[in-house]
Length: 205
Image (cartoon, rainbow, N blue to C red; front, side, top):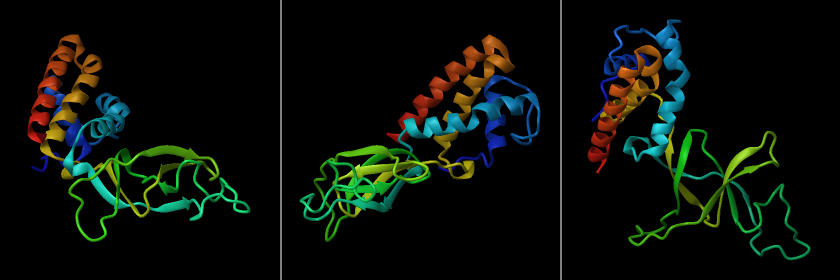
């Protein structure tokens, strides 16, 4: 089910309702105290919740972009390992890290002829390649033509699942309640957040 919130301001106002804060905002950038407070935590809270959950709407499957590979015959003189053109020793392939990736879920081989009904886990590593300027985040593995499964940074509230919207509003309310409505409101917001997370987990199965 798609969430009813259509903008970050809608999310902010939903959080205010949950904590018992009476004012509303038209934008995260309207300059009000409430807008400034929620702007401080909004993006980080959204991304943390996406990364820590198993939200289907944020899951992405993409063909990975190859940056470097080991020579087919291995590092046998005169062919020597060169960090500028080869992945770190122990890995055959170095792939780029998607700019919207919040968490890598899995690396998979590309199915060639039929689906693999007994998939095995693939060992991978996330690294920073300092041979690029600036250093570039990369994914290392031994799988050719790999497929990446990851949680993407989804910023448009109109595309979120309603369970995620509820969880985010409740978490924002817990963060903001101490400064906007005091400790009693903070306690209520914390309890509400727990209920929202339990409901979202039940809906995700």
